[in-house]
Length: 167
Ligand SMILES: [Zn+2]
Image (cartoon, rainbow, N blue to C red; front, side, top):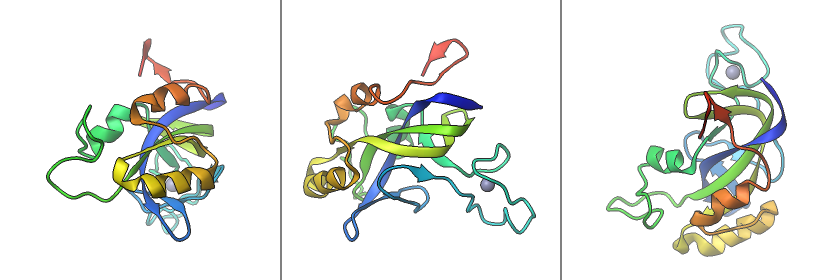
């Protein structure tokens, strides 16, 4: 589907210090500051003669984001409504973010895959505050408290609404 307005999504990254970058936590894709363009790096996709521009409906490529911030936390096993990264098991330091996607979009059950995307706001846990602030500056996006992330995101895009209900 083609959308004129960017669609809001949420995702998590691991922060990298040198150089300052957001690195995807599911796949270690580096998100450069600003607009990111999807390319298909799915193993085997090209060997099978399935070279294509990303995202493709029958592939897994594209820039991924969930529809809701809650789903990011559920997927990462993060506690909800508590300290973002609390719990008994040490986890990689993560940064949560609101992103917008546009261009060619594949709308999936829990989120979307986009041709173009960029972060629009970040939230970080207290112990990664210095790095979080530096990354926010590098990317030129506001760094906000987790509870404000969704409100800020709405200034940059629209929520995806399907089957008559808002996600
Ligand atoms: Zn692909």
